[in-house]
Image (cartoon, rainbow, N blue to C red):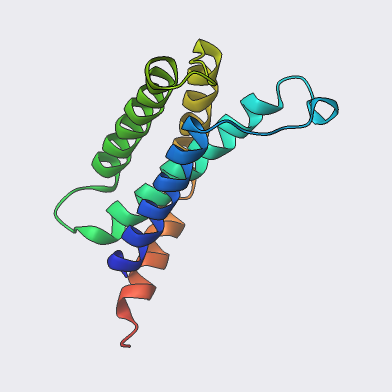
Length: 133
């Protein structure tokens, strides 16, 4: 199971990296104020949830909370690095402090949800691991 989750996490990270660094062709009339911030929030919410799912199934020697903290920190560092890369490596994108705030908000929402669902997630993990395939 953890191998499948790793592939999903790596693919998602690759797509997110690509979308962060390429020029996006958005029609002028399709732009709604702050929609890009909502996109950042959702993207980093998913980033955190997907990588946490991988970490949860990958090892049994670390606690749920430890894994959640590590993934949240990694997600924050990754998001901040993507904004720095936009400033340093591209001519068509620019880093934005508000994007970092939106990314961080998505991470915080994911952490809150994963904490609220901790008991259910641990129960689901036990059921999945008990299935003999």
